[in-house]
Image 1 (cartoon, rainbow, N blue to C red):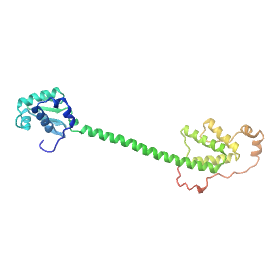
Image 2: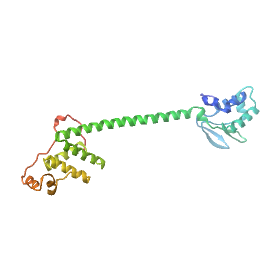
Image 3: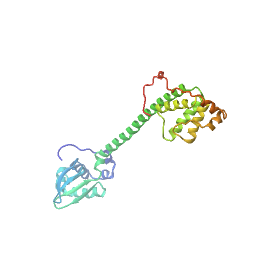
Image 4: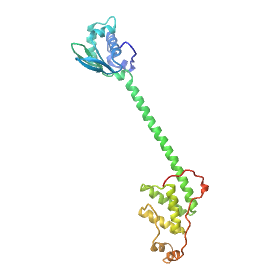
Length: 261
């Protein structure tokens, strides 16, 4: 591993394995970090093909001594390895052909775990931002729809009670998970006007659908007309064969967007 570079995380200097180690042991510890693979590499171990992962190495006592430099003996290395294993800094497996060493917290000492956590935090930070942006978009879209609905309803009637009944019907549709589009609202208002031009009757038609959680609106029966004006009203209203024009919102609303029903 003569090429490249490696990192030493500051947390290492706060650990007992560093604070209570001798000068020779500290040299050996840093040497082991420098010798470990920083990426996967193929080796032969136990007579078989073996892929060493980052933080792992296949070496020998003599190789560690050579890498550590002047003043480090084989005995220093052997003692240090036993001590490092006790502190769970590494694990080792010894055979006749070599020594397999694995740095337990390699990712921590190289800062890769910290980097991963930062990336995860960044992703988590981006999620709320994306969600907030989406919520803002949805809120704006909802406000747009509400404003457009108010314009339609305002054009249809100036009666506050009727307006309230229309909104109650739309809220009921929302609760049964069948929200109304602008087109659906336009069709419903046109039907409402076709059924009766009397606002009290229109309110009763809407209330009837709200009470039964109906998706649509339907003409009142004769007995229901009597609840509003008396028993003879329905007959007198229906004896004239008058075709009521379909209600449509004025084009002056200047609302470009439209959507399917």
